[in-house]
Length: 227
Ligand SMILES: [Ca+2]
Ligand SMILES: [Ca+2]
Ligand SMILES: [Ca+2]
Image (cartoon, rainbow, N blue to C red; front, side, top):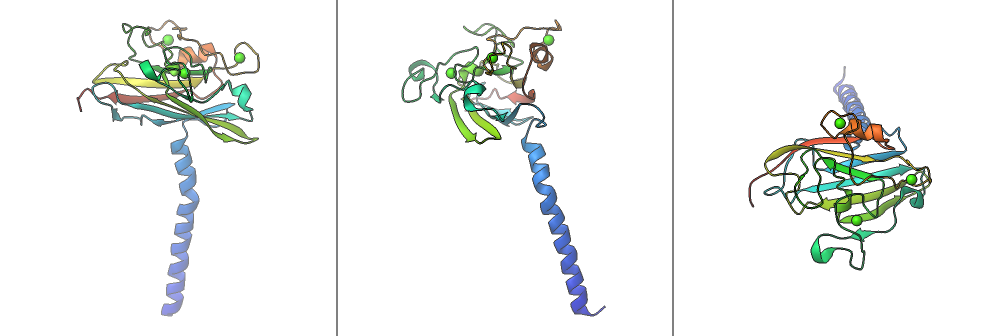
């Protein structure tokens, strides 16, 4: 084969390989980014913590950061009722984006459940791994509104070792189904019960309660070292 033909053939082969890579990459990335399969009315993607991460400083200073996509659901039906920028003590429920701060369901995203498997049962307001931690989130807003989806973003900077320190834990997140059938995702309990009586609070108990979303489960470690 003349060298110019060989060069062309090599170039075409290289382009085909590159094209294949370009074609495959977005699908792979999507599967990695999304925690859900996209077949439910609500799809949750947790960005932090990463599975297997060693997060935080002496039990605090770690993040839970997520987006919650409501498929073909208007904003009002998501249960969302205002942006919030809130936190403990002097940050609680003040302008310009007031929101309540405390354990239990969140006032701004009242269908969301956030659990850790090691949540304190002794700190005030905490009743162990069934405690819904969604009410502790600091920053909530609307990141996409189209006919296809309403996307909410929700972020928590964990300010105290409420789930222990130097411990393996599991984060579990889900959107509770419209249990009272008022057309709004506003039915998350303050505390999740051990529905199947196996001594753990996890996705099985959320399924028994009723969920509208994928159930995100992220095992990770909470670092015990000081800064
Ligand atoms: Ca709140
Ligand atoms: Ca409802
Ligand atoms: Ca259980």
